[in-house]
Each structure stands twice: as structure tokens, then as C-alpha cells.
Image 1 (cartoon, rainbow, N blue to C red):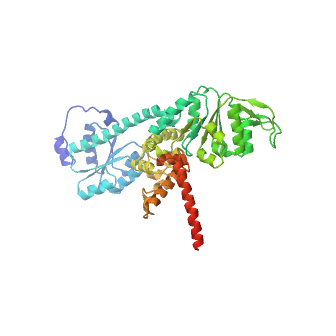
Image 2 (cartoon, rainbow, N blue to C red):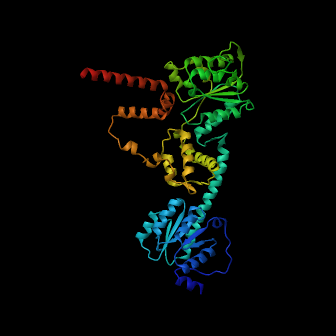
Image 3 (tube, helix red, strand yellow):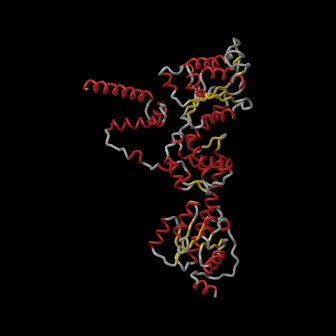
Length: 487
């Protein structure tokens, strides 16, 4: 009797008397059934419940959209023909509320065109009525298995994140694992370290990690941004001053070297310091002594110095902007921090790390990014490196309203970006020498002018790159002179 009634109402079903046990994948998936026919709705709910799911029936599209928006339902079976809001409109609005929702369209009037149109608008499947029970079961079980797989993958990713976190730094790429390994080796010994890499790569985090795993981790770590202060203020900050040594010096204060005595001092952007300040830093490294501003007294200190720069200090030495003796003192151990463009495989892990951080900060529960948002992140050049990625995820967490960050939640410049447009729009035929020149300039731009790193990326020697750049400058001057003579 049940079979006849179901067939008459448009559902092919076979009654069964045995109790259906709800498996873990099925229990984690709550389907929403949207149909304006109450009888059809009740019968479809009975069939789906018999399959082991706990469906939520409704004939109100707005109610179904709210269930999707709140994350209550990740699967919706929607009838294509409904008064007030047809299935196509519902598909578009549901996908805007939650880009990760699965939508299955049902209709009596099945055509190939309507099925393709529904899939183009975001439907996962298209079921003609009367609905075949086996096909319905397979569609539901496939979605349940997919969500169970995502749940297990997410749990594994969370465990992986814990295993791959190195004192607040996240990475699984070979270049970052090499950085972690080298930092562990260096941290055991009381020596100076130079961290080099573009802005925003996390040099300060590496410095803090080295301090935390060093023998002096119980002592203090002092941090100073050398580019943020003029020489007089920087000298007072590092070495301290006595009362009355300059206008505003109302009391005697120790500097960072005294404050961190026995511990570590981190000098960020040391390449921005003047030659006179470099001479004072050299004295600290060589003699382990300082003088407060305005005081003749020499004080002995014992600190570990970690310096960081985004400049090519070898080129700065050749240009006369950085002391050669200080460079060799600082460069006894060098660790290069790679740019984000060199470790794109770390982006998913970094995204998960920042999502966890800003979910807690903003009281959100964002699970991840949609596929199209992930694609945009992987195609971006990331000139601001990890710091730029963190800012993108932070702002997206604020604007996102669903469980997933979508393209509309990303900054405008990422939404507008079309892969290949930058290279395709202004393409013109070039000679081999011209292509070589353009490529070298692009690598230099990517390395932010760091010639040593550019030479490594290009696979040539540093002196070969310097020679080529010098020849290019000479050719430009020569062309300018000949052009002026012709005029």
C-alpha cells in the first residue's frame, strides 16, 4: 500500500520494516526539504527519514534561506516550481548566504536544458519527479560522505597545524622547514644572528623563536625598530641616558642593552641605521660595553644580538652605506626568511592559522574559504608577504556572514584581479636580450631590490648579476648621450 501511495504522489519508494541505524556521516548532515505541496513534503520527509537522515520540511523559501544562513542545513532539496520564489532564484540566494551549501533541484518537468541551467546556477544535482529512491539515496549518501570527509580532513589539518607550528610560525614547505631546523641549531649557541628577507615575512617571529629555545630564554628579550627613530632618539633608546644630557632628559634611564643584559636584543631594520650609529653598534659587539648618552662611564654588558634587514647589506657595503666590519660581525650566522611567493604551499596552513586566531578574536566560527576564494589567494603575488595575508584574512573574518569566506569578502583589489591580465594586456614582441632584461627586472622587483637573493633565484653568480646591471646602466647612459647628440 505504501509503495502505491508513494508512486501516486511522485515518489518511488519501497516499505521496509527494519529499523535504520543512523551512521555518523548521516547524523552530521541535516537535509532541508523545500516544497510547496504539503502531501509531497510529508511523503518525501518519510522516505528520507527512513534512509537514516533527520530532514527539516518547509514550504517557506525564506525559512529555508534562514536555515542555510545559520548553518543549520548544509543540504537543501528544492522544488523548481514554487509560487513567490522559483527554484533558480532560491539557488542564487542560498549560494550567496553559504557558498558551500549543497542544493538538489527537483521537478516534474525535466529537460536537459533545465538541468544544465540549474547546475550553472549552483545546483549539485537535478532529480526528476517521480523521484527514484535509489538515485535519491545515492545523492544524499554522496553529500553525507563528502561532509564527513571534510570533517575528518579538518581534524587532520588541525592536528597538522599543531605539529607544524614553530613557536608561533607556521610552515610545511621545504624552505620553511629548513629555516626552523637552522634556527634550532643556531639557538643553542650564544652568537650573533642576521635575519634577511623581505618586509612582512616574519623576521621578528623567528627572532623571538630563537630566543625562546636558547639557553637564555629565562632572560629578557628587547626589541628595537631602528627605522622608526632618528639617530639621537635611537642612541638614547639603545644605550640609555643620564639626567640633563639633552632637552627633555628629566631622569636617568637605562637603554635596551642594559635592560636585556644577559638576554637578547633584537634590532629590526638594522640596515636603516646611520654610519655613526653603526660605529657604536660595532663597539657593543666587539667590546661588550656601552656608554649612556651624556655619561663618561663605560658599562659592561653581555647580550646576544639578533639583527634583521630587508636590504642587501653586501650591496650597501659596496655602496658605502653600511660598515663592512659591522656587516661581517653581524653576518657570522645568516638565516634567510623566504617570501610568501616562494612558499605558496604554506598558504592553506597559514589561512587556517589566521582563521583560528581571528575566529577567537571576533567571536566567529568560520570554517574556511570557498574554492574560488582559495584560487584567488593562490594566484596573488603577495608583495606584502605573510603580513598582507594576515590582514586579508582578518578583514574577511569581519565582513563574512556565513561559515565560509567567499570572493565578496576579500579586498577589492583581489576581487578585481584576473590571472594573466598583467602580462597579456601589454604583451609585445621582444628580442631575446629584451626578454632577459625584463625578466631580471621582474625578479629584482620580486626580491625588493635584494641583488643577492635575485642572483639566487636567477641561478647566476652575484658578481655576474652586478656585472650585467653595471653594463645595462652604461648602455643606458651611452644611448642617452647618442640621442642627445643626434638631437
